[in-house]
Length: 119
Length: 130
Image 1 (cartoon, rainbow over the protein chains, first blue to last red):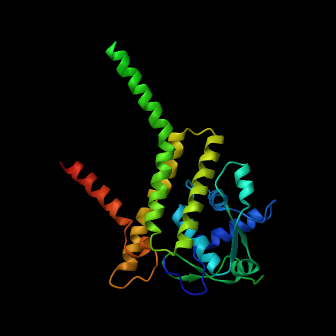
Image 2: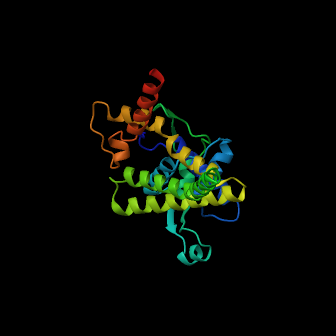
Image 3: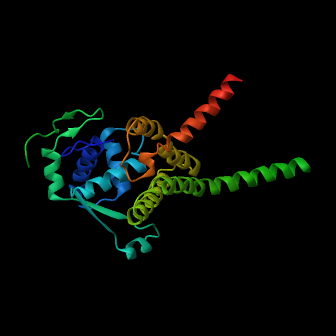
């Protein structure tokens, strides 16, 4: 989906909201599957967000400076016998964007963000 | 005796398929990821593949803990890939219709994802019509 400049796609809004919800808990950082699960639970959806959709959106958000990421310590992954996780974190810019940038709806129209006030 | 042997063979085949189903589905998903990320710069492509492999692992682990069988998990993971095809096709045709697509990934700019959907649809309609 093409995005108008300075707008967020609905999936990007969902990611930022889910990330902030997760950040209220123990960890400020999250990995891809964790965010997909959080979005599913928040929206009461039957299925997880598809991998392609999710990781493309995460990539766009990172290139836009709204989230940042790093690979986790390989030692931790090796200790737990699992693949390495890419850990994401919402930036201050991301928090501001969620409240300030309009949401670009699926049919191209631009609507106001859910919380209109600036952070 | 031969019926017994056939029964054992079917049972063993079933067990083998059961053991191989999840790795097979992981292979399909990773293969599909490799295909649609071909047009991306190598660093982003490798990262995308690694993240999806990690995601598949986390998904399988959680479903195992929730008591789902490997077959059900395999179906869930396949559905995650194929359920998105209709949306890709709608978006893809819209984007590619009559103008040059400037997206770096072949997933975006060639409507490649429509091909399997189209083929399955065609096969199904032929079968229904004969």
